[in-house]
Image 1 (cartoon, helix red, strand yellow):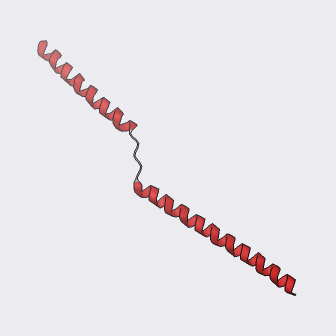
Image 2 (cartoon, helix red, strand yellow):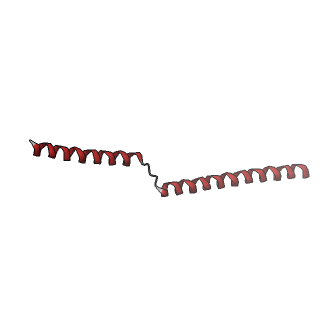
Image 3 (cartoon, one colour):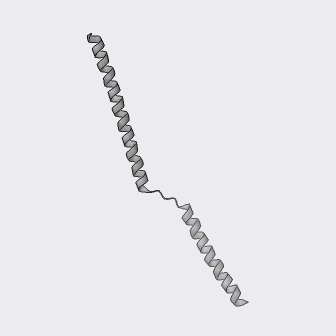
Length: 71
């Protein structure tokens, strides 16, 4: 009986340690750096495209006003 209780106690201790490790590991959230870098690159591309489109739109409006007032 004594041996059996000791074995059960050791097993419970091991379970407690492993369950604590699993809880700690599940609480830690990691993010892949490559995903973040790709997101930043995509955001930079979007802003560049928006700026180019806006500048082309603005240039076309200015040029059309210049042509209208010259004629």
